[in-house]
Image (cartoon, rainbow, N blue to C red; front, side, top):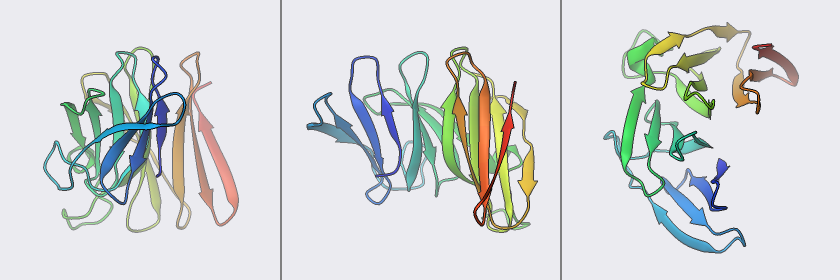
Amino acid sequence: PWGVAVAEDGKIYVSDSSADRILIFDGSGNLIGSWGESGSLPHQLWGPTGLQIGPQGDLYVADHENRSIKRFSVSGELKLHLDLRNYGGNGNSDSRYGALPISVAVRADGMIFTSARDHNTKTEFWAFDKFGNKIWNPYVSFGYNRGIVAISQKGDFAWFFENIGKYRRFRSS
């Protein structure tokens, strides 16, 4: 397991990155279902990592190896697919490679934030509107590093990234 998200109804969603699926648990921790299939098509998963329940109750998934952020219904129907390679997420000159998302966070207004690492030394961050339009895409580069993103209840976001035991933070307020 990698990521976890809790829905308003108390169901718990866990990303099983080794089996390319989403596990569903009830509030008592009992496994009650799962969905997802391995592959590289838009509706498939390949190494899901970060999860977030969005303002409409959908599940946002950082699909690591597919280099994508995806929005699914909680039953697994794909609603939005953002391939980071289409938004400047090419960490290398080779288009087969791209930024590998680690975390995803969604504000109450639907704005999507994510962090991803490339195959070299940089961590990239994106902000998309609720329709999937890129708002901005800064990056940091100070050796091999990874970053995560989080949203506060007030809608402020923060990115934290690490490099060999040193932590840095960027935040909106």
